[in-house]
Length: 86
Image 1 (tube, rainbow, N blue to C red):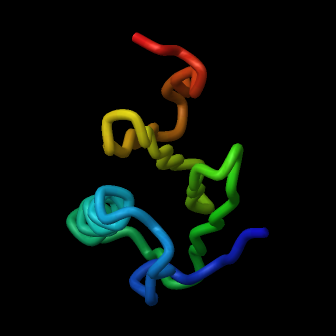
Image 2 (image 1 turned 90 degrees about the horizontal axis):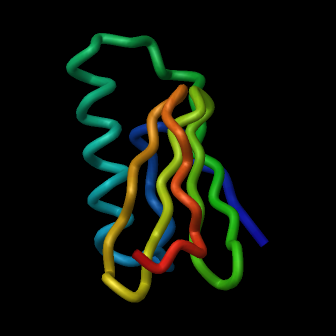
């Protein structure tokens, strides 16, 4: 099951801290660009019990529980393979 929330809105508390930090980092970049994001939303889905978050512009945040890291992929960048064990 997933959820949606607006840019700058309350982030679901079920997310790992590094994912929350990644969301804040993306939102800070958007503020610096002075982009009108008032209608943009984040979409949270769970893939194999791991959160995947996508912003309306195509930005994706994926969580790696083995390393407790979050990867931000901007629109146009290749999406890392979630099963790659590098």
